[in-house]
Image (tube, rainbow, N blue to C red; front, side, top):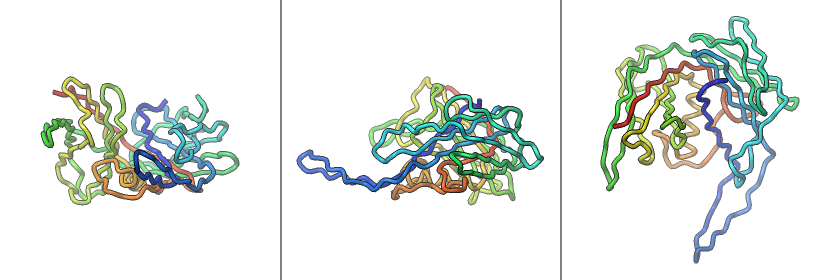
Length: 268
């Protein structure tokens, strides 16, 4: 089963307007749309197996509990002619058997779900070494904050896109989305601070930082998700919207072929 799978999808169906008057809360009725298919799949340069999850979206006011979709026919193929038919191991979760991700190769996801076929293509970039993870201590507004700093050499003359995921004491940190591109730092040695929206790191915590080398379509997906959800180092005040998926036929989610590397440190 694919390790450390990220789950960032939050389909947005509408806007909530809340008016405060004498502690009375008024919630406007929203137009609803039928449930949409949400697909998440990854192939990495780490040993498989890899997984694809398929769920359905829910209404804006519903709990973030996305019903799994069973019975889909899911395949992943590469540009060398290898095709792997995935097996459903739990409701809505499908797993590869023999496929091994390699940098420089393209991978195609095909999922037949409720008589509709969804496809996506992602190309795995060349790996970039994560040299180290260090810490930054700052104090402001009466609060002390500890942030992780990722240190690595960006390859010159190549467009690179990165995603960073933090795990604190074994639990994935989902409050912020960290993506980075080398548009202004091509070929430079990069020290990027992963600033959290609150103080979540404390002395003695075990921090793991994973660096994924992603393609431009996956970068755009997470960048737009960070912008629309107000999460991440690039967020601004923006209206919620569904990010552009690299999966066709109107599916939400993403399919990513990426390199991955991680470093673990103890916070002090």
